[in-house]
Length: 280
Image 1: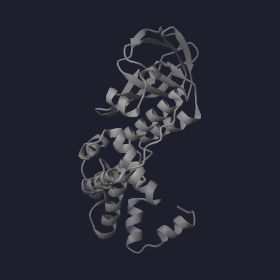
Image 2: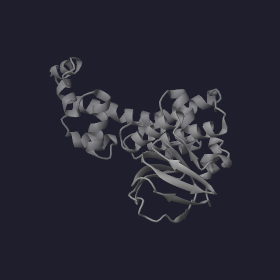
Image 3: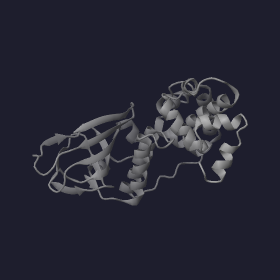
Image 4: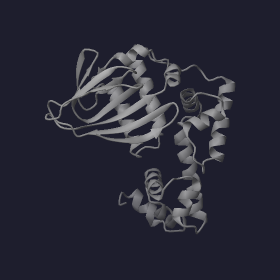
């Protein structure tokens, strides 16, 4: 079993599991240490918990409840891959999640969960400008709605809440070049991470991480157009952790590479002409 920590925060952690076990491997008893939602993205395996049996396939969900003993079996095929979202009790309270929902054991592939499971996977892979923590919380919130049968409609934002969201946006803009995460931004305005995520998205129209990434891209575009500094220096100075992440994110947003954007900003109109003509 290969386990990779994608994200570790106080409220939420995300782990990537890649199991190579097959029919010849003997299963063994394990125990859940906390509340978790594991999205099966590939392969298949059996899940035995509290006397119930589930056959989980791609798109299914494994539900973990602290203290529950369980066993995973691989009677049919070898190997599986999961993205596992671990939730702290304060986050569950913020979500309004009944703990009994986490005794479901397993959930079959449901479209309302699969689409957000894939969004969380895209965020974990760096293929989305949604934050991994944000995608995980959105996924968990949707699971709670499905499990409880009640859609959570956020209340209308009051003037005080709108001010908080605007102040948070200004703070994110001023600190975009620094390592900023959802929990840190939420602390600045005195909210829990989930309540902050929901409020910010409702008032500003994008998630905090999307706003942060776009603030970094805006500054990067300005520097690419107006300065002779290296692309690597610009990427690091505006807040991207590495060059490859910056290039990938910039290209996804602008449709051209940072180098191509710089050439276009300096008069090479063919860059965007080719883009418009579908030749990029």
